[in-house]
Image 1 (cartoon, rainbow, N blue to C red):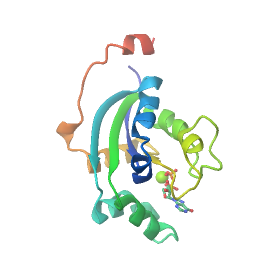
Image 2: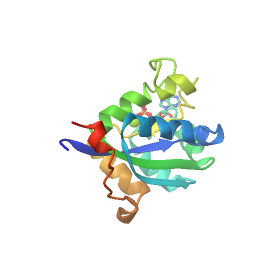
Image 3: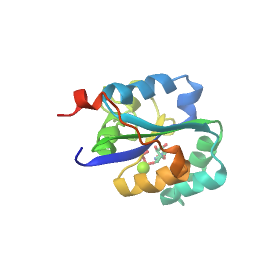
Length: 152
Ligand code: IDP
Ligand code: MG
Protein backbone atom coordinates (compact mmCIF):
# COMPACT_ATOMS: atom_id res chain seq x y z
CA UNK A 1 0.00 0.00 0.00
CA UNK A 2 1.54 3.37 -0.98
CA UNK A 3 2.14 6.08 1.62
CA UNK A 4 1.30 3.80 4.53
CA UNK A 5 1.58 5.67 7.83
CA UNK A 6 1.12 5.09 11.52
CA UNK A 7 -0.19 7.75 13.88
CA UNK A 8 -0.70 8.08 17.62
CA UNK A 9 -4.15 8.75 19.04
CA UNK A 10 -4.90 9.46 22.70
CA UNK A 11 -8.41 9.36 24.10
CA UNK A 12 -7.70 11.89 26.80
CA UNK A 13 -8.90 11.48 30.41
CA UNK A 14 -12.15 13.38 29.68
CA UNK A 15 -13.00 10.87 26.93
CA UNK A 16 -12.34 7.94 29.25
CA UNK A 17 -14.30 9.47 32.14
CA UNK A 18 -17.23 10.24 29.85
CA UNK A 19 -17.35 6.66 28.52
CA UNK A 20 -16.50 7.63 24.95
CA UNK A 21 -13.56 5.28 24.30
CA UNK A 22 -15.66 2.80 22.33
CA UNK A 23 -17.42 5.47 20.25
CA UNK A 24 -14.15 7.17 19.38
CA UNK A 25 -12.27 3.95 18.61
CA UNK A 26 -15.08 2.66 16.43
CA UNK A 27 -14.92 5.78 14.24
CA UNK A 28 -11.37 4.87 13.26
CA UNK A 29 -12.26 1.21 12.75
CA UNK A 30 -15.26 2.13 10.61
CA UNK A 31 -13.15 4.51 8.54
CA UNK A 32 -10.95 1.58 7.51
CA UNK A 33 -7.84 2.31 9.55
CA UNK A 34 -5.98 -0.64 11.04
CA UNK A 35 -5.56 -0.74 14.82
CA UNK A 36 -1.97 -1.84 15.56
CA UNK A 37 -1.51 -0.92 19.25
CA UNK A 38 -3.76 -0.17 22.23
CA UNK A 39 -3.17 0.44 25.93
CA UNK A 40 -4.62 2.22 28.94
CA UNK A 41 -2.34 4.12 31.29
CA UNK A 42 -2.15 7.04 33.65
CA UNK A 43 0.41 9.41 32.18
CA UNK A 44 3.19 10.59 34.52
CA UNK A 45 4.22 14.23 34.83
CA UNK A 46 7.49 13.33 33.05
CA UNK A 47 5.70 11.74 30.10
CA UNK A 48 3.29 14.65 29.87
CA UNK A 49 6.16 17.14 29.79
CA UNK A 50 7.82 15.18 26.97
CA UNK A 51 4.61 14.77 25.01
CA UNK A 52 3.60 18.44 25.30
CA UNK A 53 7.13 19.93 25.33
CA UNK A 54 6.35 22.24 22.40
CA UNK A 55 3.78 24.07 24.55
CA UNK A 56 6.05 24.76 27.52
CA UNK A 57 5.66 28.37 28.68
CA UNK A 58 2.22 28.87 27.13
CA UNK A 59 -0.56 30.07 29.45
CA UNK A 60 -2.45 26.78 29.22
CA UNK A 61 0.62 24.54 29.75
CA UNK A 62 0.29 23.85 33.50
CA UNK A 63 -3.44 23.22 33.25
CA UNK A 64 -2.82 20.90 30.32
CA UNK A 65 -0.30 18.85 32.33
CA UNK A 66 -2.71 18.66 35.31
CA UNK A 67 -5.54 17.55 33.03
CA UNK A 68 -3.65 14.91 31.05
CA UNK A 69 -2.17 13.33 34.23
CA UNK A 70 -5.37 13.53 36.33
CA UNK A 71 -6.84 10.15 35.33
CA UNK A 72 -6.14 7.28 32.92
CA UNK A 73 -6.18 7.73 29.18
CA UNK A 74 -6.26 5.29 26.28
CA UNK A 75 -3.43 5.34 23.75
CA UNK A 76 -3.64 3.70 20.37
CA UNK A 77 -1.76 3.50 17.11
CA UNK A 78 -3.62 3.22 13.83
CA UNK A 79 -2.18 2.59 10.41
CA UNK A 80 -3.32 3.35 6.88
CA UNK A 81 -2.77 5.41 3.76
CA UNK A 82 -2.07 9.04 4.80
CA UNK A 83 -3.17 8.08 8.32
CA UNK A 84 -1.76 11.23 9.98
CA UNK A 85 -3.80 13.59 7.80
CA UNK A 86 -6.90 11.41 7.73
CA UNK A 87 -6.99 11.10 11.53
CA UNK A 88 -6.38 14.84 12.13
CA UNK A 89 -9.33 15.59 9.84
CA UNK A 90 -11.54 13.17 11.77
CA UNK A 91 -10.42 14.76 15.07
CA UNK A 92 -11.22 18.35 14.01
CA UNK A 93 -9.96 21.77 15.11
CA UNK A 94 -8.37 22.19 18.53
CA UNK A 95 -11.28 24.31 19.76
CA UNK A 96 -14.50 22.24 19.54
CA UNK A 97 -16.39 25.46 18.77
CA UNK A 98 -14.43 25.70 15.50
CA UNK A 99 -14.45 21.99 14.70
CA UNK A 100 -16.60 20.92 11.76
CA UNK A 101 -19.72 18.84 12.35
CA UNK A 102 -18.90 15.17 12.01
CA UNK A 103 -15.52 15.55 13.66
CA UNK A 104 -14.88 14.01 17.07
CA UNK A 105 -14.16 17.32 18.79
CA UNK A 106 -17.31 18.89 17.35
CA UNK A 107 -19.56 15.95 18.02
CA UNK A 108 -18.46 15.26 21.59
CA UNK A 109 -16.70 18.39 22.88
CA UNK A 110 -17.51 21.88 24.17
CA UNK A 111 -14.20 23.38 25.26
CA UNK A 112 -10.55 23.54 24.09
CA UNK A 113 -9.24 22.36 27.45
CA UNK A 114 -11.53 19.30 27.30
CA UNK A 115 -11.26 18.37 23.63
CA UNK A 116 -11.22 14.61 24.19
CA UNK A 117 -8.54 13.47 21.84
CA UNK A 118 -4.97 13.92 20.68
CA UNK A 119 -3.62 12.94 17.27
CA UNK A 120 -0.09 13.34 15.90
CA UNK A 121 0.27 16.31 13.55
CA UNK A 122 2.97 14.97 11.18
CA UNK A 123 4.64 11.65 10.35
CA UNK A 124 7.78 12.72 12.21
CA UNK A 125 5.96 13.63 15.42
CA UNK A 126 3.91 10.43 15.06
CA UNK A 127 7.09 8.39 15.15
CA UNK A 128 8.33 10.19 18.28
CA UNK A 129 4.95 10.02 20.04
CA UNK A 130 4.42 6.35 19.25
CA UNK A 131 7.80 5.53 20.80
CA UNK A 132 6.88 7.52 23.93
CA UNK A 133 3.72 5.48 24.51
CA UNK A 134 4.66 2.06 23.13
CA UNK A 135 7.60 -0.31 23.12
CA UNK A 136 8.45 -1.54 19.66
CA UNK A 137 7.04 -5.03 20.39
CA UNK A 138 3.70 -3.55 21.50
CA UNK A 139 3.01 -2.32 17.98
CA UNK A 140 1.63 -5.34 16.15
CA UNK A 141 2.29 -5.94 12.49
CA UNK A 142 -0.67 -7.87 11.12
CA UNK A 143 -2.47 -8.35 7.85
CA UNK A 144 -5.99 -7.02 7.83
CA UNK A 145 -7.92 -9.09 5.33
CA UNK A 146 -10.51 -6.31 5.03
CA UNK A 147 -7.87 -4.09 3.39
CA UNK A 148 -8.68 -5.71 0.07
CA UNK A 149 -12.16 -4.14 0.39
CA UNK A 150 -10.88 -0.79 1.71
CA UNK A 151 -8.12 0.01 -0.81
CA UNK A 152 -8.01 -0.56 -4.52
P1 IDP B 1 -3.94 19.93 18.94
O1 IDP B 1 -4.26 18.99 20.06
O2 IDP B 1 -5.14 20.20 18.06
O3 IDP B 1 -2.72 19.52 18.15
P2 IDP B 1 -2.29 22.00 20.15
O4 IDP B 1 -2.27 23.44 19.77
O5 IDP B 1 -1.09 21.15 19.82
O6 IDP B 1 -3.63 21.36 19.58
O7 IDP B 1 -2.53 21.98 21.73
C1 IDP B 1 -2.39 20.77 22.45
C2 IDP B 1 -3.51 20.66 23.45
O8 IDP B 1 -3.38 21.70 24.42
C3 IDP B 1 -4.91 20.85 22.89
O9 IDP B 1 -5.44 19.69 22.31
C4 IDP B 1 -5.68 21.27 24.12
O10 IDP B 1 -5.97 20.14 24.94
C5 IDP B 1 -4.65 22.11 24.85
N1 IDP B 1 -4.82 23.54 24.51
C6 IDP B 1 -4.36 24.19 23.41
N2 IDP B 1 -4.70 25.48 23.43
C7 IDP B 1 -5.40 25.66 24.58
C8 IDP B 1 -6.03 26.80 25.17
O11 IDP B 1 -6.02 27.92 24.65
N3 IDP B 1 -6.66 26.58 26.38
C9 IDP B 1 -6.67 25.36 26.99
N4 IDP B 1 -6.10 24.27 26.45
C10 IDP B 1 -5.47 24.42 25.27
MG1 MG C 1 -0.67 19.53 18.64
